[in-house]
Amino acid sequence: MSEPATTADPSPSRVRAHADGSVGHLTLDRPEAINALDLAMIHEIDAALDRWERDPDIQVVLLDGAGERGFCAGGDVRGLHAQIVAGRADETATFFRAEYALNARLAEFPRPIVAIADGITMGGGIGLAGHAAVRVVTERSKLAMPETRIGFTPDVGGSWLLARAPGRTGEYLALTGATMDAADAIYAGFADHLVPSERLGDLHDALVTRADPHTPTELVLLFDETAPASALEAARPWIDDAFSAATVAEIIDRLRERPEADARATADTLSALAPAGLAVTLAAVRSARGLPGLRAALAQEYGLVMWFATSQPDLVEGIRAQLIDKDRSPVWNPPTLAELPSDIGAQALAYRPDVALWS
Image: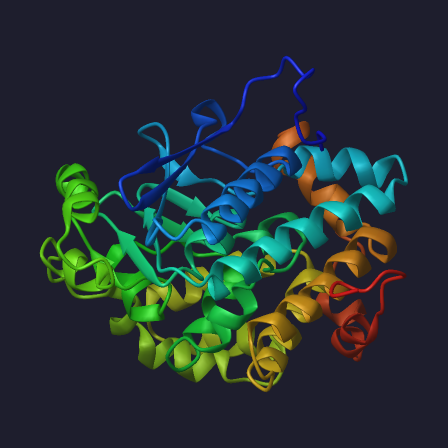
C-alpha cells in the first residue's frame, strides 16, 4: 500500500475534493481500477473530511466515483497479498485500521453524506457507501460483499449490514458473495433510493442550489424511482429455509434438498469455496447480530482480518488463484468442511491482534 502523497510526491491524487457551494464533493478518481482504494486514497478522503468538518459553510458531503464502470470495486487486494507473503503484518494492520476508522467516520459524520453507488460497488466500496446517511443506487448498480470468493470474510462494516438484512438473506449474501442489483440492495438494507443514472447530474445540481440545506433526503426523493421487484425477496422461502441451518454443511445439504434450481446451484457455489472462510463468515454474521453498533462490528472484523492474514493460508491462495495467476483453481486448506475444526468460527472470533483497532 502506498503512503499518503506529500508536496514532494509526484504521484497524482486519486481523490478529487472540492467545495461546490455548501456541498463538499468527494470523487474517487482511479477509474482504470474501478476506483479501488489504497491507503493514500483513504488518507485523502480523511483530509477532506477534516477540512469540511471545521467549515460551517459545508452542509452536505457528496461521495461518488469517476468513470463509467463503478463507484468502487473494493480495496487493494493485490497489495494485501504482497504484504502477507512478505510477512509485513504491521502494514496490513495499518491499512485496515485506517480503512475501518474511515468507515466509522462516514457513519458518524456530523453533516449528511450522500453516497452514489453507481455501477460496481463491492467490498471496500460498500464500506464507503453503505454507511452514508443517504445511499443512492442506479439501474447500473452491482453491489456485493464477495470476500468468500478469495477465502476471506466480509469486512468494512459489511457484517453489520448483513446481520440486519431481512430473514436469512444476510447469511446468503455473505456466504455466496452474490451480486445485488438496485432492487436487491434496497431490499437488503444496503441502499435507500433508486435514481436513474441520467438524473445524477440533476441531483448534484439540486444539492448545490437547494433552498433547505438540511434535507438532502427530500431532494433525493425528487429523483427517486420505485425499484422493481427484488429477486432476492422472491427467493426468501428457500434462502430462509436453508440458511437458517446451524452449520455450512447443513446449509449445503438443505440447499440440495430444495426443488428450486437456484438453490441447488447455490449449493454448488458454496461447495467450491474455502471451507474456513465460509465457517468463519457464518459465525461472524451471526455474532454481529448481537453487537451494539457499527464500531463493535468493525472491531470484530479487524480481529478476523488479522486472523486470516497471520493464521490462515486461504486468503493468500484465494487472491493468487483469482487475481494473480488467474487459474481459478485455488487449493483450500483444509479442502473440505468435514476436515475443519468444529470450533473454527469461535477460534477466529476470539483472536486478538497485537494492536487494537480503537487504540
